[in-house]
Image (cartoon, rainbow, N blue to C red; front, side, top):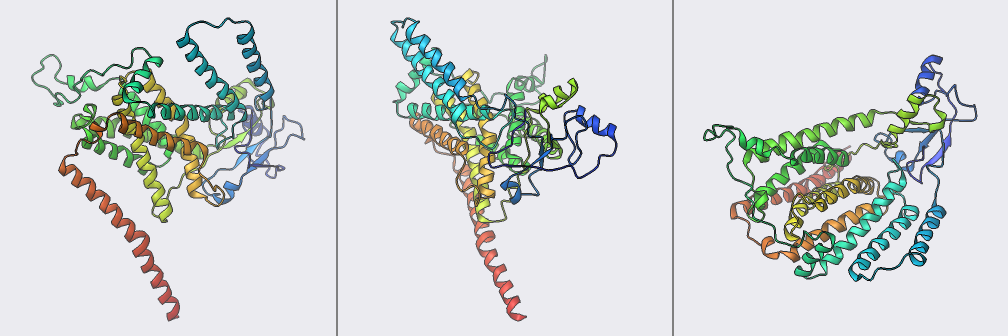
Length: 466
């Protein structure tokens, strides 16, 4: 059940060079489903050697990318099944064509034809699409989400080219309950933490906020931390989004929250706790040994169960070192990532508003699940493209599609409700944003142009003086 992390990985068999401390400790490591580096497996034949994965990326980032030891087992689980999938797909189409009577319902046939076309495309993509940087639990899983990304982007393009009325009514084909205006809701209300006027429960305002969105906030930021892998960037995005909610509450009513809901419930409790747990998980993943055995090479049931569980953990690990102040390329890349993250977060709320989808609708949840599965791959591809442009000469396919989706979603919002988007921001809020942008621009000039030229001139004068 093992496979190299990337097709560029060169698998080189290496002999064990370090002796194990005792035979019992070596046997215990084998029974737990892992092999210590350099320690031979006493229960496996001599010809089964531990292999070390050495990728070109690890040569460039040896201090941030872990070493992987793999026994090279390639079972049925990892083999290509292109012919099998093609045969099953052909049989299904033959059955529908020859043995099933086509209904006379045009609407039903249209929906069925669209779904069948998507399924055929997914079958092709899962078996034939290019692999990305992730392979666990299986490369086909990530190829599936790549194809789903393509389908979602095509759906957004279709919605973008419709009129506002037709686009909203088209959502009825997905769910007949959609396509109707959303009712007005009060999101601000009473902001007293302790309400003395309520004798039954003075803290009712706090308990009213304890809904399903509290664990959703925590889980969302836990996953975002695993994607970004940097505490500072996560905290900046978390705080910046609260400022965006303050700035745009005149456009969307659900941005109007109490101050303690912004800074205590969101930033400190939900987001902060999610980021903390995410950083602890990242620390564990960076320290975890990545040593893999095939399932059938593990003699004990306990070891096999442990090996199956670890199949859902990364094959290897790369620590992200963004270093935004090191050069202009990294600085602009980090700014772009923060901007796209914030735009994607805003799209979540604005799309619900302009397409008339209730917050609790399953399509809203499916979109979040979609970004959870594609966001990690996109961030890894962006980091590789930024960190090693000589090897990664173009932006990864998933990152390209996620960026296109984020922009397309925003364009739908602009087209479907320009009046809301163009509501003027209060003057003092606009002043704050302009001041922040000006400070960032000045710091960029000083750090990467003025200070760099000054340091270079000092070095030249030092050289000439000697």
